[in-house]
Image 1 (tube, rainbow, N blue to C red):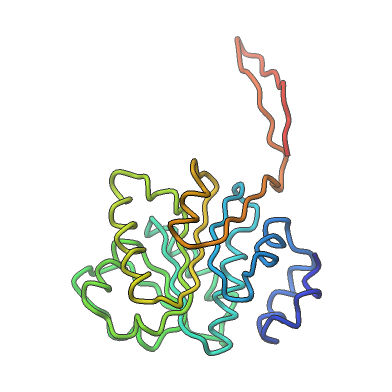
Image 2: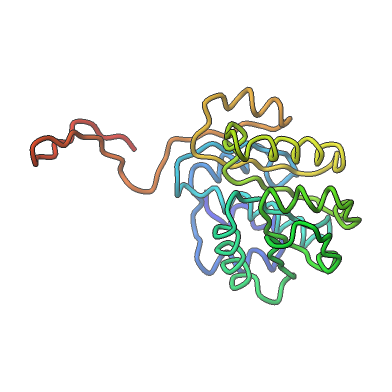
Length: 224
């Protein structure tokens, strides 16, 4: 699928940004679009690393912001990853909408976030914002949960599960996008999220499997 094929469904400014670097969409991105990504459907995307999951979330979030439907929250497990995504999006979408990074003081409701359109947060920080009853949360339209398989993590899992449960109650019309490369029970999780499941095995580089023994590396299988 070429980007031009979905241009009618994208805000002009979003299409202008993407067309600078993208001509053809990857298989997982095409599947997500066919599953209703640009129509506001919630999706659970389970595809290999570097297969294009971030752009799937980006398409929905930026589209909803530019169309005036509401804010976007991007939840990541690590502060370093949140900072990396914040810098990437700030450079890419400079001047189109406002972006904020919120990973600090867990005892602050950060009222200044009410003026921002796209927020990058850790799950712990979002948990704090919800508990502080930040009024602007009701303006959120798109929620992205990166590494959603961490629901199964004994440390971060409970907080993430509580956050998603509370957001489903607080934002019944939100578009929820769960992203992961490894989920053992994807359909079960998709059902709990009330999301369409998008799976694909395509990866940008060949994955080769082999055995290293006595200084020799022998490859015996190759998948793509």
